[in-house]
Length: 158
Image 1: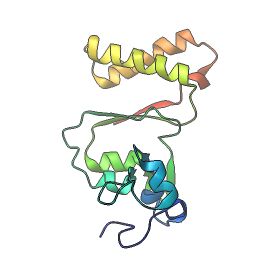
Image 2: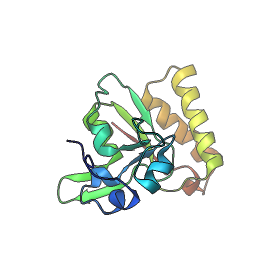
Image 3: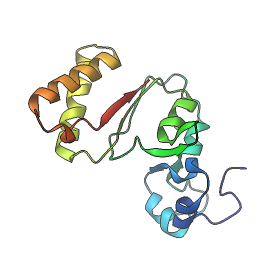
Image 4: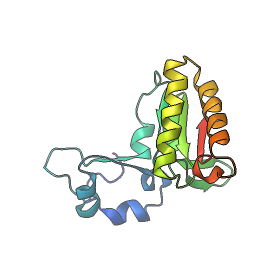
């Protein structure tokens, strides 16, 4: 049984769950309604909330890269000596090879600049993901000298 089955899931369920893999996730189309009411927009539809637990149950073994450019997507709960539980762990359990995530609130404009530069290096420049990420960091370091908070929040996890 999936967490939350057999009970109404609402905003409080996600916030107060003891399981950090339930407290972490992505809100997709229709998710705001489910977040507030505990029910999908229409019976039989998905609720639009993809928890880290649900992600960890997927088969992403052939996924080379997951990019989560929204603010603070690299955060989670530190659990004893087991590490961080959250989106990062979920995607790695599911089999994704690389993840790009942010550790803080990177401004929208610099996020767009970072992602555009990264994809140019990776896809047009035919660089490997780590090489493209390092090239992007170097490019933004030069462009925003002394303002690392505007771009350095992005991390690459292998």
